[in-house]
Image (cartoon, rainbow, N blue to C red; front, side, top):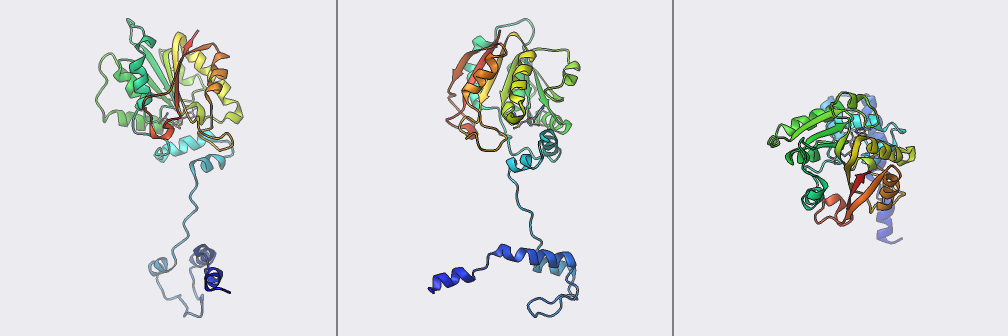
Length: 286
Ligand SMILES: C[S@@+](CC[C@H](N)C(=O)[O-])C[C@H]1O[C@@H](n2cnc3c(N)ncnc32)[C@H](O)[C@@H]1O
């Protein structure tokens, strides 16, 4: 046998030691003899922990966390927010694709005597809400967990207030329920923006169709839906969130509930997550 083969044969993977270490740590090693070494019973707990560190739990991916929840996704989102674990999706800024799109299409928003109203479902820390408010709109961000809206509100207090008549509000509620809507004076909005919200809803549960119907009900006739389409590059057999989508899916969902696509463009600038693949679309509610 070559020396390389021998080295491979006898190289014991570090993980094969884990069950033994775990057992020892669990039992407190009183009176245990390992490899003919003297009993360790006289050692203190702190010296033991440096000799036999407990095995670290296996790291779960974002998608694994959702898969393990047996379909209880709302509980997962709330739990992530309660723990302040939003780094998975938070980009720290409004998407430059949206900023450019709004700048390029002032025609989408006719001057009005009252400030325009905008809603961002699943707004996260509220970067897009804050952008719409800075453009003079009454902007509302909706989030599932009270901890999420607390975090969004606290974040907004660290940035400059929006210029009049802009305002920003963060509301706790389930997008599909009327409970939060009943608490607002506004029942329909001039603008709804979707980025990484619809694709965070499990398509296997029919939630995309429900999202489309709900969005249609939340936008005034003549109002606008803007979708930053993501992740268009992702294979359909990969787990979510986010779940894979294509531009044709948006067309199928939204035309069937009374939207007409008025713009569909490749952005000039992107967030890194969707670089060179995202598309941005605007839909008029007929
Ligand atoms: C992928 S994150 C995106 C957050 C935000 N759009 C961003 O880009 O930072 C999806 C968000 O949707 C929220 N969410 C999921 N289901 C919801 C529901 N039924 N109603 C309201 N918010 C929901 C989650 O709490 C989560 O913050």
